[in-house]
Length: 301
Length: 301
Image (cartoon, rainbow over all chains, first blue to last red; front, top):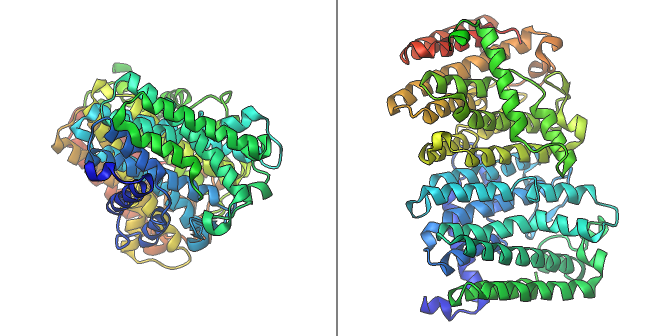
């Protein structure tokens, strides 16, 4: 812990992301197992890098409340699989029709549409396989609760899929602020919030602590998406690893489009401060949650 | 039970399918809940009818081993949701490109590709929401085991998605008998087998009983697909509710294509007799499992 505590937040996130990558490696079928093409496609998208924000949040929240990495890793990886499946499907020609993701061709560009659809399906399914195969700390009550939390966040009501539907349905029109908030809270926010809560559930957090984690997760989830919208306007393709300006071109519902760039920056900062204040209620061991909140809007990609 | 026992198998299946339809109605979000379009698409495909073979197998196997309908219904419906998601995605233009399913336009024909992809994703996710929200007989150990069984059967290794990949990859070429067997066992067989086993798990079946149920499920799963292949050659569009001759036209891997029609009929009958013999080991209360096995190859659509 001493060594870990002295790391900068960037070092901490990099180290944790590396651990998550190792976890992911071991939790999806090898490319040598049939159907090889599909397992290759799953791994292609899953192992393409990325910040691993969601699994790192599971781990950071869980450790802050006293549970070890081994009990957190399966759920952390399952959530990253769900995140990756959602990216693969969002990128499809029938949806956002994106060619570039995490700095390389999107899954359907590399493997064709049929395999990309199935690779997404398979990552979603594998997530629940992993969740149901590892009882954190041998506690199946917590395990069931984790599965339910993840299934709800990945679902349709104020959740991942619902947000994607609203995003698609509101393309090419200026949305009102409340629709924008709904899209962001559902499409990005729900799974980020669930990540934090899942860490807490595995750690056996009290209902009060879970509520606090939920608040924190909600704030950083929204802050993350606002920051993402800002980056889409201000960043370059190289830094982003995906096509920037794409949201603007598609007239996607974004914070800068609805509120302007400056107001978006202010809002992101406010959310971060609220998140930091919320994390403080969890005490000193949760200092990494404070740092992650700040990092989310300070990042360049 | 007296009244139920005196029903013919057709009456029994119809009555059970009706109960399943009521269960499904109550286990997916209403069309009035946002995102409405998506919930409408989910219900459009889910409530389009069909034999409800998989959920009826969950219920029949579970009841044969002494557990009640109320404890079986959520898992039964969850498995039907997974079956429906797989049909929606299989029908997509990038996959089998089918226009007709269960007697009506396929989901993407009615709602567009984007919503069809998301409706499939949502049904898969909702299945795990349902499974994690209802502990059969309050027993969370059995609940976890059910979730794992379903996740594995819906997965990639000798399972649903793996079978679909192999099916696609072997289109427009004559497959060898072992590849055909792999496709059928995985694509159709795995979820049918899991349905029977899940009924047993919920009923608290012994490991020996679960093995027997697994054997039974494997036999009828394969018999069902062979019968389906035969129907594709011999039936009409009206009776099938989907485009017949489609497998032939796409040069899909089918039993009649590989073994000929007569040998396929013989194989289907053999499998049914093996399944009936296996079901007999479960004793008199499992007589409906025997009848279902016979029904599977006798059906006309």
